[in-house]
Length: 438
Image (cartoon, rainbow, N blue to C red; front, side, top):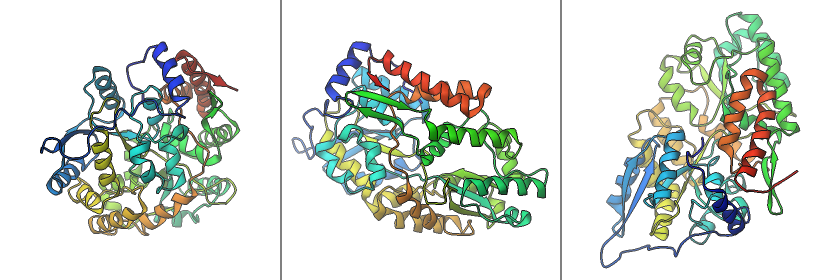
């Protein structure tokens, strides 16, 4: 997902010098206001696409006097980021926005986020290291984590039992399980490997294998999109597709949904938030689904992530301190989590980044989901947070990487997709006036 506007080359070069690849603060303004001004509450504006956001804002406004928040719902994905980007350029951006971890470096490197190190740095230090690194590229704080999204294996207990398959703990076991499931029923496959590639799914698997994505070396960006771990992952999944051991429907397509409803897939890779969608899509399969850690390459616990959101303050906010105060409340206060989940359209299975809120979310989910899963989704998911592999870095040109991968994967599989994404990343960095290092 990529903002539509491209900052001029000169501005980006200046941004690089100012940020030193996000290593030093480039903005932050004067901090703005935190309490009342002339006896009146500070009014913040917030844009988000996340379900339950309005309920969170209503709860905050009802319990706080010095700060009030005006909420606007926007669409997610490319359209949402383009709207945020355009508002920043026009000088009328909101004070608080949802910012996915993958997009945060792109916005920060262009000087489009306020540096929250002074306001939120200590708070972010209380989060697990694997999360801190996602919002502190270059050692400065550009956002506060909201949720954590370790990749998990969701599986149909009945279909695994029918095929005589145990839950795989390694990818070698996973391939053997795929063979047995196909042999047991020619109409069933172990899962759907998205045709054309589903970027968050693909990146998470490369991350788990030890791929670095991007990095910083001196004053230059390193690009490791097509490194050895990524190529190992690509070869494995290209082989599963070639051998007809997995389905190959487009991600989020009607074909994929129908296959799941008809029991033609026995598992899928997802994140904690995937549980809510499963309940909504296949309520009739209650009790048949369970959750397990993602298989690994060597049997040792390890996972990447799929998605995840932080909250950030766009460049130009006049109320940075107040915005940071609101962000701290909505990411760490139990009242905020309860409000977000209480009126959700479907039982939310979001796993909060703040460990103190995970129990609150688990209780809300248990009450709303009616024990849909055969085991405890939250217990399994929370246990994976400490196994998220360190070393992965999202780059400032992730949109270009995603586009190149998706364009190439149809012709050359994941292997060709990673190679094309590597070339596109280097070209995009140089096009923006950013240095690269081998």
